[in-house]
Length: 506
Image 1 (cartoon, rainbow, N blue to C red):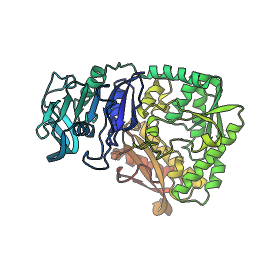
Image 2 (tube, helix red, strand yellow; image 1 turned 60 degrees about the vertical axis):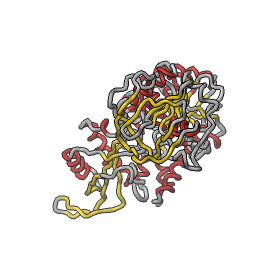
Image 3 (cartoon, rainbow, N blue to C red; image 1 turned 135 degrees about the vertical axis):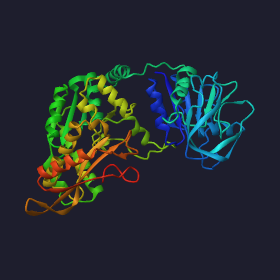
């Protein structure tokens, strides 16, 4: 499979580079800056990412590129451009006129392979304090802005280009054209990495990997585990054993409705109602981290008990996606976070792990799900925290608090769907606050719970803006919650963005 390798120097935009290339139906992989896969015959080109460092800092990453330059088409972006210039004898230093944000190309070589199709005065996105002050003799400028003479260059005699701006950012108007010129034109990659091709190749790989073995998978009701299950089901059929655990912290009626839909999809699934077990374990605990650990430990115990009822299961399937794998490694290659999304189960159960989605970003998982024929109710479902409503009940958890939150949440989510707002919001939910307030209902004084509505707009959850929902909608939802949910007499709307806040409250 043809691929582009992105060597990561720690830029906040590295995953965005990969997403842009994937959008061109070309496969790419992100690797730490010093982990180039020597001898991989599928590599067609290499991208050097940006970095939070200056090339002049002692701690900056400075790998040996002699095994790459001249042997593969190479594109340096921001830090990558500056490092290529400096390591070849050029000079990089602080600019008298720094460029952050939008800039315009003042001139460029329209005949250069990298710049073909770029429009005059095209907007680009800058984010750097240093600039290239002097290029080596065999480097040739191919684009400039009013303040940055070396906005882009190429090296004569080798297939190497570099840009000081960020073509992967949407604000770079012709950034996609520049990346397409590199990936398809210069590297010669074909645009054949599609959801359909991924499904075919993954099913074949799973059949080869798993043979006649049995596989167990924990379903959550979310898109990742559902798509992983459907791929495995296509590959091995009833030898896939799915377990769907109700920890008592799912949304209203979600356990029964999702279990029904899983069976309609043809999955071999066992539903386990362990809600009372989780309530007992959580009784009296209000610390957020301790609640998370109790819920995680409880899931492992229930899952392990159910899996042991199956005979001769050798594989544990997980819905791990590509960002999980990227985050599990720092750019130095050291593990900073385990990506096993079911905790220590693989080691504890002495099983091998199979991860059908390990190459995909979230949006690609959804596209594969659609190609598999999974209903949109699964595909377009908002992200939902692993501990469920356990992190949306601030303070200790009781069955009564769960009932109150489930009913309020159901009104909010269904209201979003009825008013065609659900698909305009990235994530939404209700938080039960650990306070009570005075109210008046009829002629009686009340002293009941307050809830906060939370809805955000985002693309990846790393940053998020609060959703500016219509006032009439918020008014109607507030009235319905207060009138219909016994135990609530006050509703507020959270207008905090991330950062500085987080999406969830715990």
